[in-house]
Image (cartoon, rainbow, N blue to C red; front, side, top):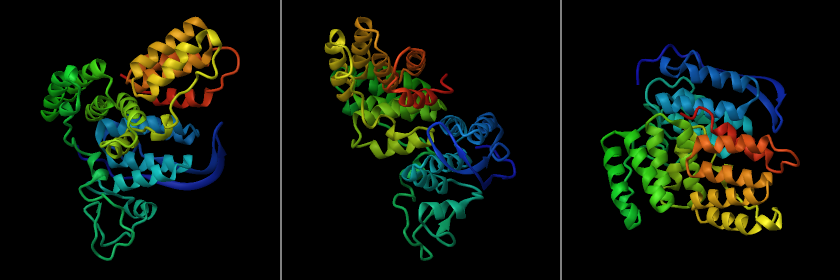
Amino acid sequence: MSMKKQLTLGAALAMAWTTPALAGPKVQITISGDVEIAGKEEADAGDKAFSAGDLRAALAAYGEGFADTKDPDFLYALAQTHKSLGNKAEAKSLFESYLAGAGELKYRTEAATEAGVKAGKGLVGGVVGVVGGVANTAVGLVGGIAASVYTAVKVNVADKMEAGAKEVAKKGDEAYAAGKFAEAKAFYDQAYEKSQQGVALFAEGMANAQAGRGAEARAALAGFLASAPKGEQAEQARQMLLAMGGAPQMMAKGVSIGSKIAKEAKAEATSGDKAFKAGRFMEAAKFYGEAFAKKADPSALYAQGMAQYAEGDVKEAAETFKSYLASSGKLEFKAQVEAALAATAHAE
């Protein structure tokens, strides 16, 4: 990471504000003067969105900034954004990740308080330790999950893949280990196409995160968590998803439209629901597309977009979401679609 400008990060309580979905105390965040030059554009965008009350856009911008730079200031801004959204667990997790950063952490004391640990002697080198009488120390901050968002932790999924996808996944593992993250992403994408195994999405998401592709990382990691919320890599995926400006709960309830769509498209919609639940998102997107072809119901567009997003096809998902929002009639899933569309921001 290049040398940073002098820190000027500001956070001050002000008047109450309201967004279409949320209301709460306004916290002004300004990190554009704090971050290294490579992340200034994303910091500016995040600051403006936060000030305007568009917290979803702020998450996407700050997440993209962290993907580009691994600058801890973006994690602090993300944590404050989640706090303003009322996402207490996510905010705490991000404050912990911020504390695991290296270098000068201007808001170390504030972040430690938010994370539920004592500042002072227990905070060594920006990492919460177990010395100096630290109380309520957060688990995993020393050399654990919180610190892993800054480094390219080992990814090895080939031995977990089905036979037809094992060889290409191995190439992905080798490319990832060599620091060739864009190349690794391409191999993992092929592995998912061959197998539709969620673990390939985990690997693809991690490769995207290391390659600085925040929007693509958000999608693949969200898809992985939708397919394996309690899987072996689930906690690591959640931590990285948060650092990329995502929200693990976005697809926590899955997709189910079979009972809502007209009978002429019910069979396809139900098949899509089953495929989505099984983590076979490519199949789900196909079924939902067929359902929409039989009955132009906006709910099929919503479901198709969510399946496309979960499989990591960010740009195509964004177009489907826009089509949903442009549809006439009752848009039952408008809030979910708007949140998912915001998560596609900055896709390359």
